[in-house]
Image (cartoon, rainbow, N blue to C red; front, side, top):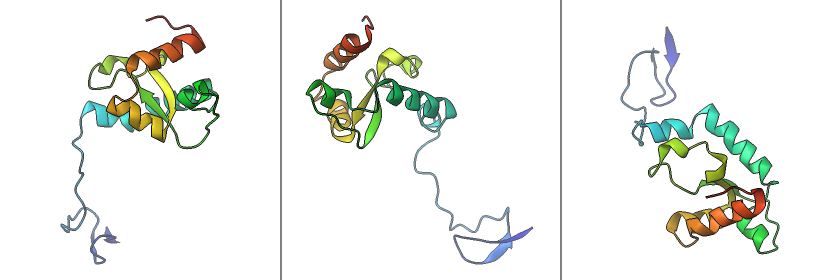
Length: 123
């Protein structure tokens, strides 16, 4: 079947590789596959809903931030892939606090204490 190629703007067989199509930059490993999975999207949405659509660090400081929300794995996927969907390992953060948590500026212990205080999870 002939198709118009959106990469080289020519018409050729749909299975033909014109060489212009960009290659994937990230290797296909379990972590990258998980980040694009339906299970993660559903869990991420349920965690944001559980946290009332608020950054939990901002909320602790009496600020109510609904913007730029992301779900953070307190124990990273690289450290413990088996905890990827554990509710007691996931917390809603704004972009700024997520970046700080990723860099270690916000400690894991602090984030776990927020979850313990809010939901009674024990660590």
